[in-house]
Image 1 (cartoon, rainbow, N blue to C red):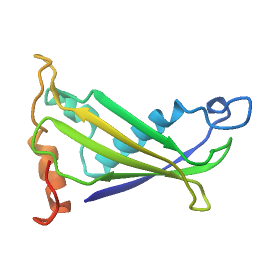
Image 2 (tube, rainbow, N blue to C red; image 1 turned 120 degrees about the vertical axis):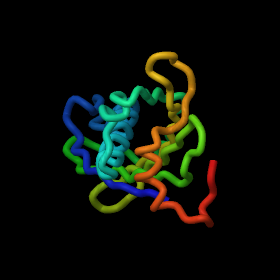
Image 3 (tube, helix red, strand yellow; image 1 turned 45 degrees about the vertical axis):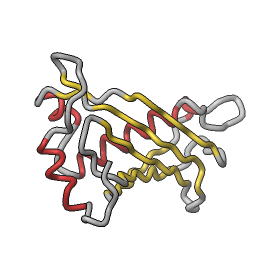
Image 4 (cartoon, one colour; image 1 turned 90 degrees about the vertical axis):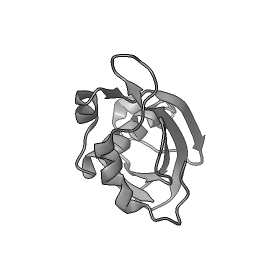
Length: 142
């Protein structure tokens, strides 16, 4: 299993009239954490595009347990529970506040798409090679 953690500070513009983070902003928090997780592996979304692959989101699920507020320092935990073998990758997210309380959980499914043909394709080998060490033969594989 691959894991990563990214810190995000809630900006005033991300809150509503009740001083609560607007629900739609969690998709951006998830994206920031996913991009940083891939960067930690020594790869980037930009590098993926350079090898001819895009990653559109095809599913986004969120469950809001507790609110986050302006100026909270959040930790977005990213988990990749399975090493993809085809065109699909599924990220699990947990958002916690500074006290370690779980605020929001999410799941995001993306497809690997060939930039030119717009058809589903496999994960770039360079990314797969960077992820393989985090998965043992006992781990489930999609």
